[in-house]
Amino acid sequence: MSESDAIEETAEESPSEETNGNNDVVYRVMTVGSVRFDLGNSSPQIHLMEEDPPYRNVSITVALAEAQSLHNALIGAVGLRPSTHELTTSIIAHLQADIIAVRILRHENGVFYSELDLMTARGRERLDCRTSDGIILAIRQPVAAPILCAEEVLQSFYE
Image 1 (tube, rainbow, N blue to C red):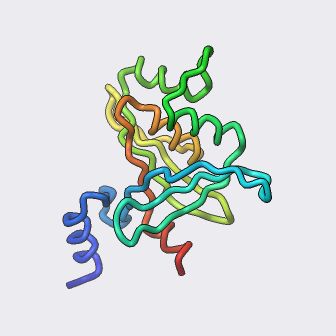
Image 2: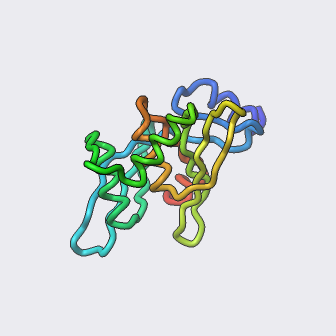
Image 3: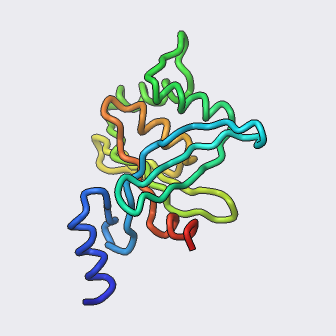
């Protein structure tokens, strides 16, 4: 069995994996474990956990505003006036688009690169986004969109 056959077979067996159209990237479903602010570190961190074995995790450093916005999204809080993420969620809904997923594509020089995968009336659109923004928007959907992380990104933290 070739390596590509093994990847395709594995993707079919596990509901928490997704492959892109070329079957060359495997994505793992992640959940937000916590948003933490450590007084010893100047920036908050989002902790993502893999939903299935081997249960790896990734920490993403974010700005305080994004950490607060994510916390509010997790508890379902809505401000008196819409935040940027609340406004963007409203715009997406008003345009009758759906967030299919947020994908963490790669990690280079300490920076995570992600995309927001949308289904619109014109078809599927993929937009470059900051990982924190993508996660917040995915969680703010009426039915939370999945957070997917490329297997390569997870492996880079566990080598």
